Length: 165
Image 1 (cartoon, one colour):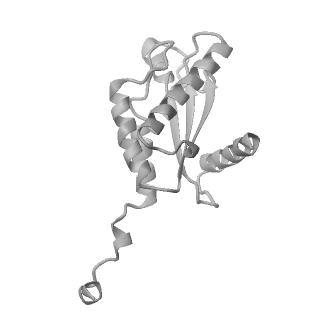
Image 2: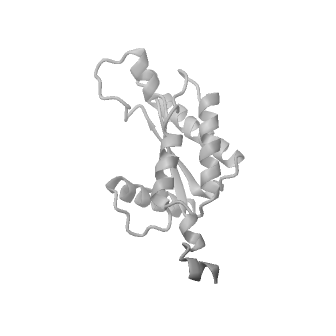
């Protein structure tokens, strides 16, 4: 009765828009996410961001996360693939520790194939930026993704899920 008489917004209007939450999650998980050389442990600063992201994720049911591990160009191709996957798995492990359902997180590795910067000159700063985990957030209930990257990822995760079965 009070809502009807005062034209108050319904309770569902107080929840943040999914697009804004996806943007917040992406910002939390994709900043300060660099790793030390040849290491897969997350930094304390990134651990705080992962914990904050987990708190947001737990409020939603329809978010899936794709964690893609990356390395710099130093090292062999095989060791870079393995290290990059360990980095993605470490971030996944921390999200799960903070209460995110394991089933909503998929990990992949890119190794050194997709550097963060396009600079041909690889100094220590550029290599540090290449050592990261890229988090891609998409709506699990979205059957018609708008973003080309999201469409490709939905397809990938469907292929991965079918192979797990």
